[in-house]
Length: 354
Image 1: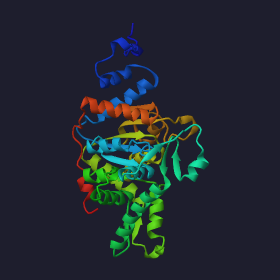
Image 2: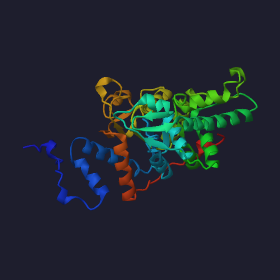
Image 3: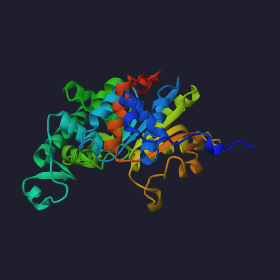
Image 4: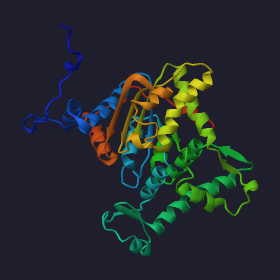
């Protein structure tokens, strides 16, 4: 009689009296459990295994309002330890971290029965269960506007830059002011930060504040977001030609996820043949579901395979868990285990002349 292939891996029970001694060992064992405990542990294992590859480029999509929720230091920690090589973020997540890095504070508010009209009266901007002082937020936008205004004034001719170049220079500028935000730490670590929807954030307000009095034809600093696509493809192609595999993680979905996944599609189109260059590893942490059509390429193990974005049979994992829970657990496990990146690529070449 043939061996039943479905009896290869047992589902293990949760037994409080037989827990491993360390949290990270217990967390890793959740992969033998069920439902989202299993999904989350599989995400942890996929991300962990990415970092043990000798030659791999790791991309991370970062969406949701996670910086205002207090998780931007976790992204900084990932960058410092080179657990990621390329960050693709929403504009909010790389501005609302600057807010706190400046010394501003977020405050807890009641998420269930808030008086939003009263919050408006007190000039408090609500993010579900926490809020920021509107005047402090304006200080953030004024800081970003100062950077834009200074750079524009230095230029002697019309200069077009991508968001990744804009954010790298901003990071250097913030570092000199001892404001160690995500972009500042990324600039020091030579980790590119892309923001394909930069205007949809405090950066949009800052650009208008800085340059609205200058006629468009006379403005020197121009941010060209289509250039971002060319430059992220450039990084992926650099890696492919040197034998690097690709891995991607998505905290949430949205524009950062779709923009990152397009790397594989565009690599194939640029080669002008039918070969595809999908991500070998992928994971996603989300609370969205595919049947509504808003999961940004649906699950990392399904629809993206038809586009050549994800490898069929690749190391893919997905957990339908609040990212504020998932990140705490995963990063704690990495930290407690003493995990180190095996061989992060040197992307210093990308910043030459930028």
